[in-house]
Image (cartoon, rainbow, N blue to C red; front, side, top):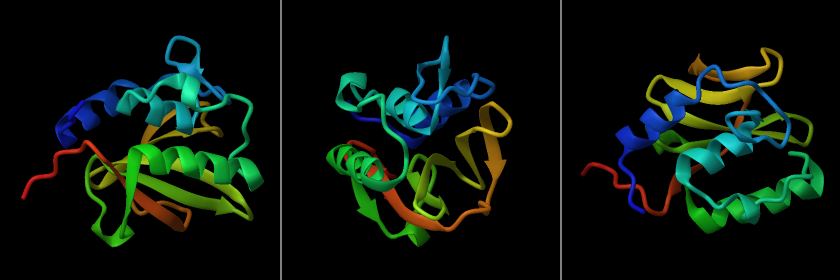
Length: 137
């Protein structure tokens, strides 16, 4: 499936307000940051285990799944529709989808999916572009 950045933004923004739920994959019951990426990009949910924590060895495993569907890019070249990987604290990770001057992510403290202005409060550990994303020339 080939996605344009506008398709990704539309899908991501449609999830705004959805309840936060750790390991959540269904908007009806709640999503976490991985669940948002899985839903927006149409990644089969069975390919990402549900009993992970975005830290330690599970973070490495999530990274392997990401590399299957996305290619790493220079964070300074990220644009709408790309996925940012944040190093929140210590070895805790977080994912978000870039929406121009904002990003969509699952905010555990607000208990919902939100759109937040850039720059993020956390350092960017990596940026990824969908292997099927059609970027304008």
